[in-house]
Image (cartoon, rainbow, N blue to C red):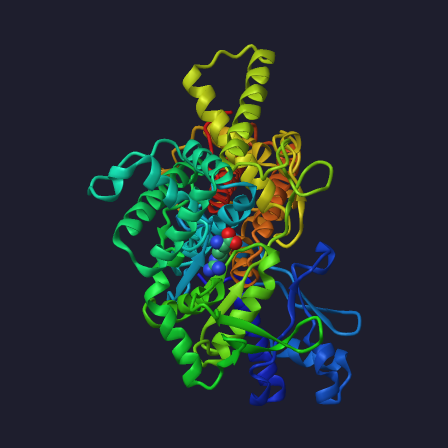
Length: 586
Ligand code: ARG
């Protein structure tokens, strides 16, 4: 199904051609939703922008366009307002026909992209020599949401977790495996290193207290880089332990399955990156280090900044690995778009590696490499969120805390309402609400802003929150269910009929889902979907306050029950794209 806005655009372009000639075929008709229903649903502003090139008054241009505009199957007769705005109001017949098509489509009328190009979303990419902390909350949530939306839109999505699984931070951990689990190095079995938290704690303790151990740690890094087999074995054990532990956290968060392709994966390709840059004449040796001098980046003295791709000791770094990843993703994965939901503090890093990739001729105009930056999670004091001891908060603890809050909340509500529910129900609802609240609080903010992390706010039953949205679903769904109609047996003439203003407002909003998702495809801002859903439930409330549903006469009754049902379906689909499940009752 082509979106309404896309259809109207095409018609406007056809009118432009008919009015002014074929050279105007690609003109953007500047079609936007109106902000006041008085002016209809959409407004085309192209007449103003053509005044100069056509040397005509905008109003006269608008008149010529309208005289050639064929939209009677979609909209009422177009109107011209002010200096030359063309106002379009969707016709009732068209809206009803759209509602019928959407209602009977599991995708709710959202078309898939054609062709289904491949997109890589690079997330979440923790450094696995440490436990995951608050810094991994946003890439996990945003990456998961964006990849769900893009997958739903039909893209071939590859979720790659570019974990930091190589280099210096592993020295201490490898040294500890050697000391505490000497057998692990020789034998093939996957030795149990216990819990990740205690393993790190013990390793750190040994490192801090013993100089000889520190020496062993440094030595281990050298051996790791040199590919020593026993060292690699110890390294692998640590990676497995970390990845397993992280996976339990991803499961708790309900993230889609990820492919782990860590930094170590690109080791075999690093030397070739340096060589390829050299072949392109981009490589400069500076104090023993191999680097590319960047355009548009200067150091403190105002001189061009080098991006080091091979250090003077022969080692490679984070940027080299990302350059190798860019090449691999293009050559082997045949990717068209790569999205990196990574904190805003890495803006320069990505701008630099993309620049080098471009200058090396790897990144062309046919592909897009996009850093989708996000702001910080702040505490209620407005400062970066930290634990009481001053360390970064552990991700797992944050999630457990949210669930605990949701649980207390739920138990209080159940008591107040004298409701008796099983322990199983309480656990399930607390988990879904706790995790969803964290996700929704994150996604409903503009991605690029910082936001304040507050359990009280995110768990509130009122406002733009997950509990509110899940509750809205339960309520709307309940109304439709009470109507007790057999959806399957409805004949075609029992469709949604729009009569009251509130029905129109709600229906038009429902029909905008595809436009909202198309916008997110472009700007990667999931808060648009949260806003859409929140407004949907508000418009539903207004409809429900003003239009009787179950007490209405037929055929209005069935029509309104169908509208309730479609609203519920839309909320459910929208929430699922945010990574939030719905519940039957909360
Ligand atoms: N491991 C990095 C960090 O924790 C993030 C990696 C992001 N992805 C990438 N391809 N550079 O800072």
